[in-house]
Image (cartoon, rainbow, N blue to C red; front, side, top):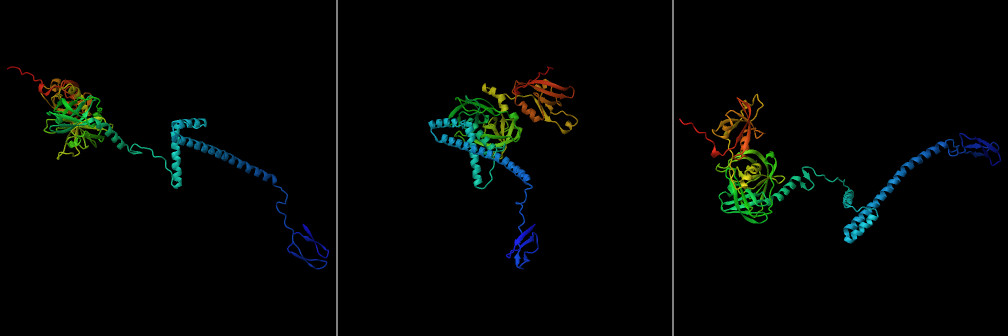
Length: 471
């Protein structure tokens, strides 16, 4: 494109639009002229050949911005409304907590009209949400991460261990039913088993005593009388004239397992003559122990062994499980010093339950007798057979076992329908029954195979002796 420049002398000069130099000489007067090229045309001054495409792109951009902005605006308005509602609820709760009864009713009507809930459950939930919100705000202010509320587990709860809480409940629930017994010869313990004054204890605690005073945790004291006792099983039942007494319910000692947590309650060393028993904690160390404490006249045929501390004075006290149920009567210890060495024994409550009706009638129990001696199966006897039981090696003449047809060499596999796994199990189970009870044994003999024998448990002093024929 040419550009026209006029020299002062009047000469019109046409200059090429694109040239290499910025100065030139006038052809008329020879004056040097400043030749400036015309500024290149800007893009904005050029024809808008791409205008439709730009408009389209602009429209698309605006639409996208609108799609993003509208939900954000809606969300912001929603959050603002929720915050306003939460603030109103908070003011209503604060007014309810700080107002007298008349003001509370007025606040309830106002909040109901404004749409705020007055349901106590929802208000409690609101308070919990506000508390959690406050915790989060405090944590953020301290620049610390928030943590979710701890949930209790089977081992540890929010406020101490669950075991600790259970032990506290047992101590509070069982202690009022465990009493201290004072006699002219010493002290012992007892367990109240009914609201009208029946108390279980050991025979060696009250047997032969003239004065029996029972001290209750409540501070009351009563004189007691002996209803019945059994020197062999070391069980005695005494009674006081009282009503509405706290008592322990019976558990099931047959369901005990090794390692199960138990508590022993009683009056060791006479420390609990104020009536409040001492409580010790342990586990079930062993089951089905045969114990002959003292001079050997007494016999615990199916004793529970525990490492809960049992000391002199604990005799006759309670052994309870973690639910506070009575599972045994503490009676003896094994110790070289005469104090607790972690080996104590209790009479299982299932044995006591069997003799209790007889004791309540004022009659002493009569231990059962079958007249049979047994042993465990030898290893060579177990080979090649699936049978298990206890082997009879001696039968007393004239005994219930002899009259029923039991013979030496027979294998007793079941007693009262329950498997016999050892001689100890059989002896313990027989000790649960008194004279006159009928029992059933399942035996395997060499001549007759499997047989079921029924026999009546007899008293040891009244064993039938067959008459000898005259010569």
